[in-house]
Image (cartoon, rainbow, N blue to C red; front, side, top):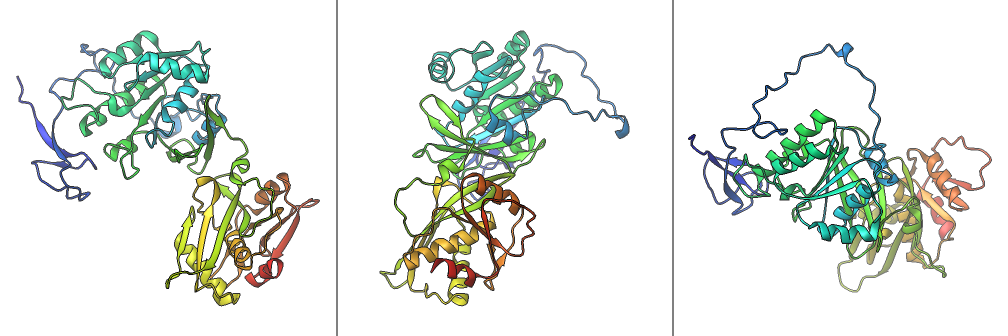
Length: 453
């Protein structure tokens, strides 16, 4: 019998060592290095664990001879999920979905599995079939295409796949699977790599898409080695606050589409509701006119969003003024405050400034600058802005109002939602005609002050 080989892996970052040591030199974490058994000497194909069939040999093809016709994507019945993936699931692809515990990863994929018009195999290593049935009763109890399998051993899973021949496979979660070819426990670095490799081979050989759920670490990264994200075709991140009902689906990696798209859901008792108009949740409904509120026309990928910016400016109680920003870059907030003090003459150096982007999302679009400035000025002067005003421009260090990309798409979205006036840079080239919304062109920050104060 061949000698069993062992090595040492860091359970945090996946670095490999020849012997044990206290600290990982790669990620600097202590007591994370553990001994694991490497794969056994004999290893067979995923189809038949005992088979000795000859493996197929791939032959090189001239690039001009390769068929470039795209295979039709599989529609999931979920418009938000399709948008983030780039139009649907690509046959033979491997998709990894990560997120915080309790955020709704299993609910999202079970909901999609119940809606799919294809034969779907939902594999769970965390819940029993009865527990999944209880959750399915709330979402969509009348599904004739979804099969539930509770199993963690990959060899047994592939045996059931051969008998059922599903069109799509969903695995919840990759950290619970284990293979006979690796003797370490489930969730270890070597087990995750081996199980993912087997699933990739299955997906590519049969053109069956596989969707995996992945746990994340305390730092927000997907648990397991970083190579796991390199192995799969698509990496999705499911975000949100468990204390709020809204969830955001992003693509951190997508070999078959853009990574700029965004999907928004609302958590309800009957599952996750698709939010086709995100502005309805990002703009608060209020009866009174309050100071410090401004609406910005931003873009997330190709999708226009109207986002509410809230600012509070008050006299500093302590010696050092506080600067706090939620959902916005704090350094950029300090830069905008310096521009207001230098170019517009507002003495904000001795005042506390708090900024919040409603809806619990983070915005990186520079077009939000003008709305941030307007909200700060509104709170400082205690003057409320008209509800039908919105802003879309970047603010430069010299106080100039800089143009932003795809401004016409922002204007059309603002008009659709009933805004009467939008403030943009006069350096933007706008060819829209017969608009019901008034386009207010400004070139420097002093022009904005004249409309607010």
